[in-house]
Length: 169
Image: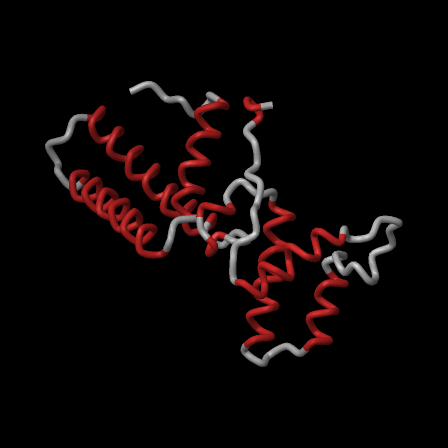
C-alpha cells in the first residue's frame, strides 16, 4: 500500500473525515469509536502471532498506530467548539463556532438559572457583539430584528445561508 501522508489533499480529506466523525451525534460517534477500537484490538491480537513475517508485522504495527491516532483525533476534534451541535457546524469558522457556542451555552445557563440577564448582557459585550456597546456607525437592520423576533416567537428556524465551497465561487 502506498503512503499518501505527504499528499496535502489527502491529508485534508483525512482530517475532514475525522472531524466529521467527531461532529456526529453521540450514538453514531460511539459506534465509529467502537469499530476503531475493535480494529486496534484485532491488530494487537494479530501482532501476538509469532509466525508473522516482517512485512506483515510492520503493516499491522502501522495500521494499529494509524487507528490509535484516529481514535485520538476523534476525541480531540470532539472537544472543538460546537462539535456537540452536529455536522451542521463543521464548516463554520472556528471564531464563529466559539461565539455561537458561548451564546448557546450562555442562554442555556440563563434558562437553568445559573446566569441572570446582566450576565448575558456582559457575555454579548465580551464577545464584542452587543449592538448597544459595539462602536459602529451601522445599526442592526430592522428587518433582521423582525426576523429574529418572529423566529423566537414562532419557533420557526431562521433561514441560514450555507457556506459555499470555493469551487462554487
